[in-house]
Length: 253
Image 1 (cartoon, helix red, strand yellow):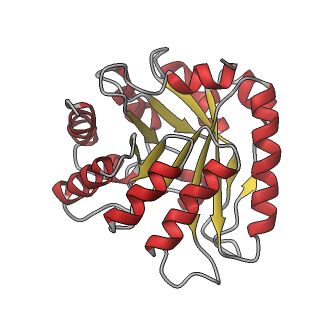
Image 2 (cartoon, one colour; image 1 turned 30 degrees about the vertical axis):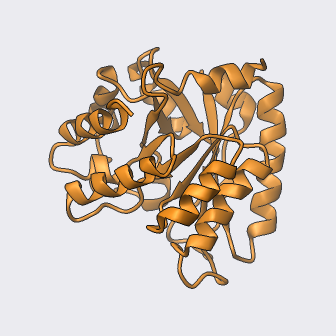
């Protein structure tokens, strides 16, 4: 067993075999997006019953890392890009693996968008980060979307399946991709992926029950958990939303 494999296994609840990861890395892309103003208050949700991990950019880890309980895995996001840049789907490496280690990371995350003119650079970045992280014994969470000039429908089932397969092919320890809404192709992609797949929560849904229903369908297709941000911190009561998600994900399978 390698160090990265051992740390990866810590993300999954010993009873349910599933994971909930709270993504709080939206400020780089979206600025003062609703709900993320007070990171310290949001991190209080990790105190328990806690999600299995929380994703933060390095500056927030320096400022608030002491608020992340030892029982909750700290995921340092290495990628970044703002919604104001051109093209908007560009993601650059903004933190190194050594810096993430110094900050106490249990895992690093890399965001990739495929189907655009910057795909080659993002794939190269991911390959280099994966090698470096595994040498350091850190697992890699690959967050993969189909976004860019070649993409007509970001939720096309074949594209989502390709995102999942890509993460497995390139050595991610955990893969996160959105749910296409088409159960058969999603289940086949999850089954064929050598790494556990977390369904990405995506944009905030109008109805929280609808969000939970969509996540449940993805879990029924074999997903090993949920990576959620906006559908938690943009709710009127984020803590209540988190507890409802935890209850659903970790109920007896």
